Amino acid sequence: MNILYLCHRFPFPPARGGKIRPFNMIRHLSARGHRVTVCSLARSLEEAKAGGGIASHCARFEMATVWNPVQTLRMVARLPTPVPSSMGFFYSRDLARRVRHLLGSEGFDLIFVHCSSMAQYVEHVRGIPKILDFGDMDSQKWLDYARYKPFPLSLGYRLEGVKLAAAERRLAARFDLCTATTRAEWETLESYGTARATGWFPNGVDAEFFKPDGGDYDPDTLSFIGRMDYYPNQECMFRFCREAWPLIRAERPGARFFIVGADPSPAVKGLGNLPGVTVTGSVPDVRPYVLRSAAMVAPLNIARGTQNKILEAMAMGVPVVTSRVAAGGVDAEDGLHFRIADTSPDIARACLDLMKDPQERDRLAREGRARMLSHHDWRASMVRLDAILDQALAAHGLTARAAEADRQPGAFPNESRPATGAGANGGPVWPGPEGQILRRTGSQPNR
Image (cartoon, helix red, strand yellow):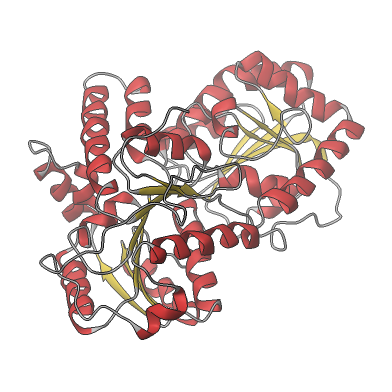
């Protein structure tokens, strides 16, 4: 198939959360023999230069470079309008022009969009099967932010969350099939009641790259990994260092804690003044820091979708102490594969248990990695993606093979759009634990 793929962050190198999922999809689709054209944004000359590496994983790519001051102005301009500011941050006239040119000059068999903020480039396209992978339902993240930010920032985040939720409802109706990263995100998508068909498929982890190295760990060391210009990570570290870390140090005065992640704010850097705390900033490789730790902590209060940091640590055979909300995107069980704790005393106790008990740490390390291999392998996730592609094409009376021979010649709003319908038996199909597709045929039955 000839596939047009749009994503909000340029997907190479896949070194952060917003890049990992689209990169693995692009690599998989290309490996299956599809011709993938990637359209995305770079936010600096350095990112643009590094992004060229995607060329070996796709047929071609279109990259528009944007500058954050300009994008911030686009956000501000949308404040008094019903349009979410997020749409302004990810809008580029240059990229829009390139997408229009591609649609007018090439016969695409499928349009795949990752992230709701990129749907604006193709939401009015007709005549081509379209899939929107929301990933996380971003509206809910902004609404979560509103609970933690002071007034008047809280009001701004709440307004953006409400506006984005309305946009998500509208966009869901304009695509043949919509997906999310986890069952919880899918339930939010389903609650809108506007999508023609929905499904979900999980994030995976590269368990060959993130694996145990056979070395020793330091029972007095803990770690956290994540970008430190990201508010949920910042809030988590401020709270952990203020409330849980003193309890840990009271029992283990020699304990050390490494906060590992790029672009720490001045306030985050200030945490390095606390006894035993090191803020590393950007590092070439996070693995040595995690592998030497008794545990990796991720007790986030604000978390949507799947926390890749949890998958990576567990794949490395390092136990994880996390919160219930952050654990929601991981297919694992508390006490068997990782430890869940929500209050600071409970977080400290879970960490201390693993620091004191090498047998329990070893058991959790083995069980956690085994769970990643069995339930968060990218290959299994991509099998679900293939089924989703088949469903979207079937709504147009096509298969992946037939699409090559029956491409739509145009892609403009005035072209007719084949109606989507029910499954082969004429009835709705509801998603089970393995991410089957839900197809809506009118009112939704009670569940």
